[in-house]
Length: 469
Image 1: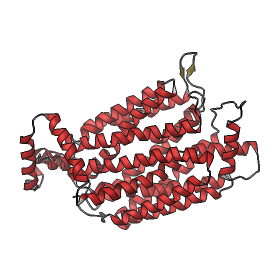
Image 2: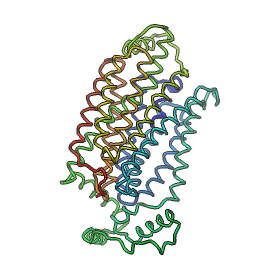
Image 3: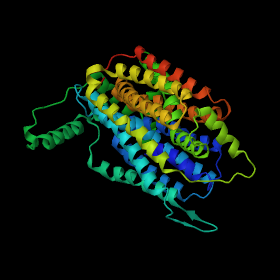
Image 4: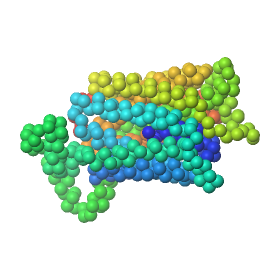
């Protein structure tokens, strides 16, 4: 919800925060800069102190930062709190994927991870619906020194799920696989018994497993390391440093480099275009209102909007037509059938199939956006793009989560997501710059990067229906 909400805030807040296309690009990007920092920081901590604790902390942090950004009255303060919001969000990605994957049996892990990925689409739809319901209204108030209008109230409402998640996490256990990797079999066994009781409604004494089999060599290494280090924080920092170094040593080095490359190229396209869809819908709607019954490509529409904005007597308008919300909902909803296909087929056709097919289809749609000549054609291209990229994203998240071993999983996914956020930053800044100055370039660049990044998955091992390392 938090990432895609910015695409609805941009047209609404442009008058309050005095935004132009360049500052909109930076506002889209600042959350990814925060996510890039937060991904590595929180991912490394999660491999040291646990998945559950980190998820609780960052969920509370995320909620508070969204609330604070809704009260921000200037562009600078808004940027600051969106950066901190991104820092919390950046940690949630690698940690939640590791946490959830470590509870799943190998036969259904792809299906369940794809099922979780589908809730990204539900979040997007929920945000679009909330934006349509709240932003066009005149609720809120405006004074000479303080403004709290509808788009700010929309942000406040969007903070609610973060607080809800934080409280609900107190009722979930720590990952038993993480506990085993830290040499804590007794705590892991207690969690397994609890899962058995919940699933079967039987006494914990009837749990059929008597003891857990674990790596004696790993246990000895952990024991020696604990004895050689004194202090809780010294151990945590040492563990974070060791995990980072290990990612860039053989045999993990190959997985790290390929996953970084795929995430970087994929997310330039994913965020570079997806975050700008409502803006493109708004531009087409404004052009069609001014020139009814005339067809025009995205570049002609953009030239008109940019030229209009550069006029000295131009009046700032934060009005978003209802058609923009409707088109946004349709394009986002198109990901639902794609998510369903991914859920049903991820453990059958495999991660690589969905990743390559999805990126190639999305790449073709991206290139096709240059050839659309009305809002209907634009909507069709963006809807197919949204469905294809969502399927590819689910496969990418599954694949990257599974290739790293348990004691490096959150850190490995975090490093990959640092590259993903870097792609999001560059994608938004480049798209913002090229869209207004060199119009055909963005769609072609995105097409090439998506297809090339998807084919890079051929260098990773097949993890479909395989045990987590």
